[in-house]
Length: 115
Figure 1 (cartoon, rainbow, N blue to C red):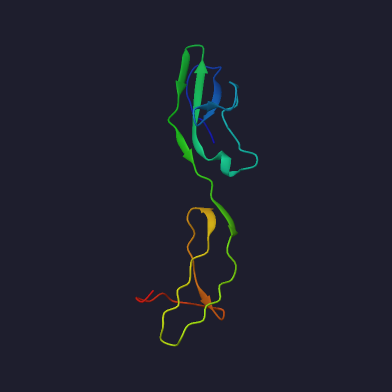
Figure 2 (cartoon, rainbow, N blue to C red):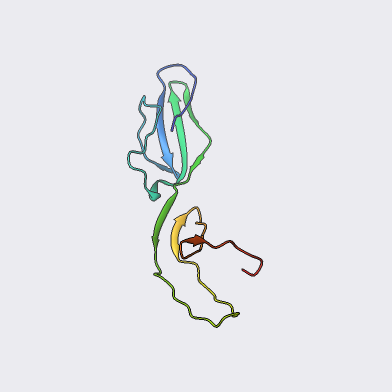
């Protein structure tokens, strides 16, 4: 992330995540997350200061996309011809919410009005 500011030098920058300071003031105007994790999601804010005072930038939200593992295994259902088979969507922790696509014998099942 980059904090853009104009003013009399020297300018110093500090970064805040969810109202908690995560860096001290320094001349570095960029903040790099070296190994992005879900815990890095939140509202970031830059504070700029010089000998005249300090200003806080507007907060910027960082969202971290992730995909967890499927919790449930294969489902096997036996139903009589003409009857409905109800399949439960797998439970998976993720952001954003996943889209589920069903396949039968390797072919995608096209949703119909009956689904």
